[in-house]
Length: 134
Image (cartoon, rainbow, N blue to C red; front, side, top):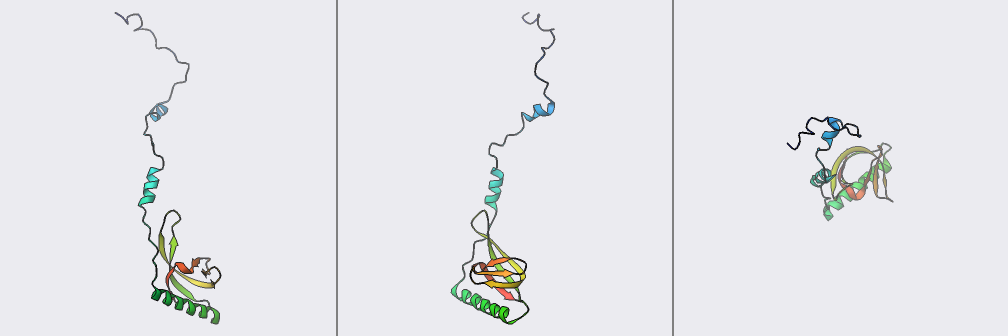
């Protein structure tokens, strides 16, 4: 027969070290050809709100509330506490979320048009949807 002379020979030795079963299995593990695709799809599926555009009447009411708040800040020694609903833009995509927060007003920055709270929160005046003085 053709293989009679080699069938009983010992297996040839390799100069390379023997590979562990774990490393051998790793060669056949799943391959992610599109790294980051899952994260990108999750980000795309994440819902955000669009910013609500106020009507002229709503803007007038909000302006009046800001006037009352400014008067309270100037007249009272005690700082007013408010419950404010405002828009926070999303860092990754168009849109954002509306947040309701209760806090004490430190001051209204008329230069940068921001409402500053005592806890360090800065809220853009144009991001405010509504607030009430508590």
